[in-house]
Image (cartoon, rainbow over all chains, first blue to last red; front, top):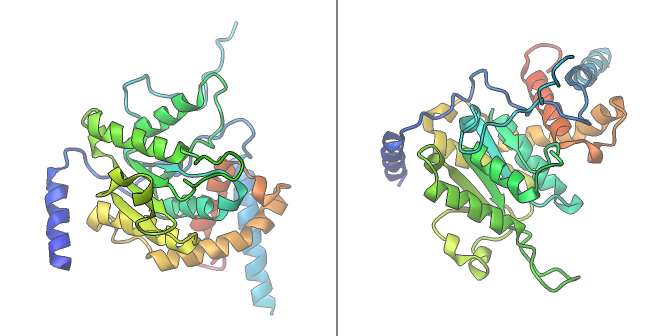
Length: 61
Length: 228
């Protein structure tokens, strides 16, 4: 069964005329910021602060 | 006199495909509060698979009608996730809401009749129960239709497995569906704290802010060292 699926996937892949995306490539993961959206650096800072404080609390305990 | 600033999110002219076509995933789902856990799970799963979620909740261009916006999103996305689980009789009107099946139909139409790159489209159809769709939209039999049973972890696994099937070895390094579901649960638990630091209600974050928070959280969580 698994072999059949794999064969089918390979056949489909061979028929593709457009390349598949490089998932780990440098493409944008989020749409550009628009009106009403928070600044990127504020969001990133909030996340990093949370992780930092949690790591510090873990070390203390 | 200075020229007017260029819009931040310039769209390609009608008929042209966006440069990000191959990495953009159109999420066609309900926007109500009850559905929010699944919508956020789908968004998170797309980000965890390193693709870019797109949906009609993106900042509005007031000049566009809703259907124009949907058509543009469909044109710009190679991938589509369509949740038809809310196609049900409304208590208020006694009629079903049919926006999700309509948008699924547009996506399938673009796939069938569009230019070469549009014919590369692939979609995942989600519903609450397997085979429920046969009672209201039986013509879609033959598509990938997966039941999520109203569970975010099932929805995440469905998205991850679908992309893995589509992308083959390119998806080998992605985390598994269960691992992504666990990350999602941890992110959702952290979201109120992150939102509080941003003076925002977590349920009122814009679609873009939610995506940016999830993207930043995933990147920080994956970074080895004290942060993880």
